[in-house]
Length: 220
Image 1: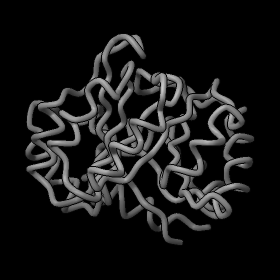
Image 2: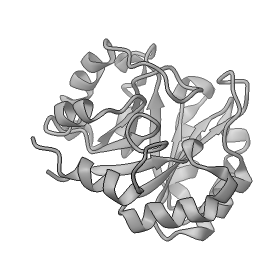
Image 3: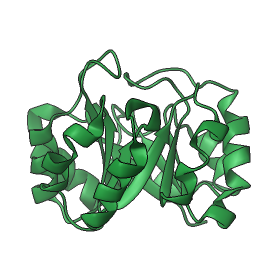
């Protein structure tokens, strides 16, 4: 079964980020997920603009930049100026007064527009955005910290979005507490990709290549 795997780089070893990027590339990761947090929209700080710039230069693989910041339109240009055409930028619609304006800037820069949906955000409140974006990142945990527990009611949200994705032309991605069981359940239903953090990828006693190989060989 064909599905994408992206590494949540906030979980990586920042003592040797160059080696982490290289090992993940050699292991077969499809893309790199960059969580940018401002300490306001979420109660935490994570990766920085400079971390994103370094990874963009260190790899030819796509970047998925997840902006967990207030009013991203105020700062979107400094991110877009340091990305490559074809990279993805996700915003949270409720963090912006006019999210469609920010999404249009992402599109104009040649990037892939995406929205991230929190566990407490209903599909109905983002319905119009679904007609603009190409990717929808559904948070199965509350954003801001790695290693949280899966919120089971999010499964119904995936079901609703999967029923809309063909009509509205977007792909669906999983972020948060991503286990092998979740991939086995939701990849066959049509979820396109999965963000891998501490649950499956980081902090294991195996090389990244072995971990990723095991995931891709899951028995559906």
